Length: 241
Image (cartoon, rainbow, N blue to C red; front, side):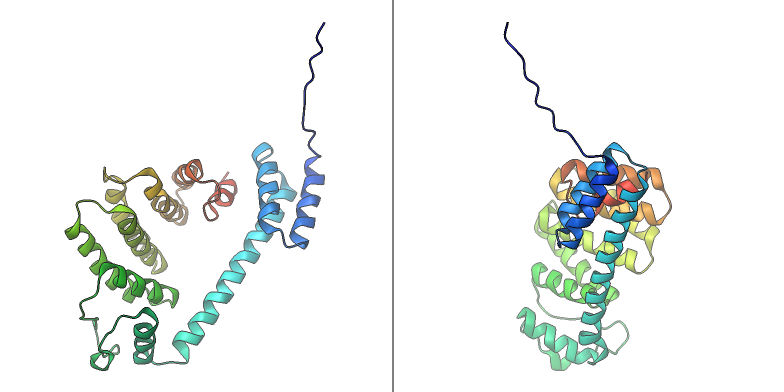
């Protein structure tokens, strides 16, 4: 009679796995630690020690991002006047602008130059990273308009443009406006599922900030169904359980 062998992977107790995750964190293997904690919480969503450690990791990562972002703003904004910033962006992005004619201190100022949608987007990203969200939105509107005139669908680049625009709205606490802006875009038939990924994530963050927990969970679930490692979607989904 033929013997049948069964290979079963014996998991450690959840508390022991949390200790293993702590060791991974100490060794700087943050992503591996997070994966292990996600596995624990998938099986035991209410495991207190796993949730606590994951929250600590997330908080530390956010502090590092904020520290980097604040340092960037201090270097790029607080020690320089707006005209100097434009000159530096012009040089760094290779835009060939006549910066002497700009007056960023004037009300409703704008860059009146023949820039491609990609150049507008690059400029918007730079403004966003400096915390100049209204300036970023202005360039993004130019870019979105150009994309829609050139082609009948947004495509990957167009999605990046509208996603950043909606994130600017969120940063300015215009959360309802961001939701109203994104909803019709998500219904556009020519967008591929992979292209919608960033839009799913932004919409999830919007619903989360509005306190619409079930809806936020649904959007985060859509994200991880496409890419489990996308930003912090999996962590936020667990936090919303």
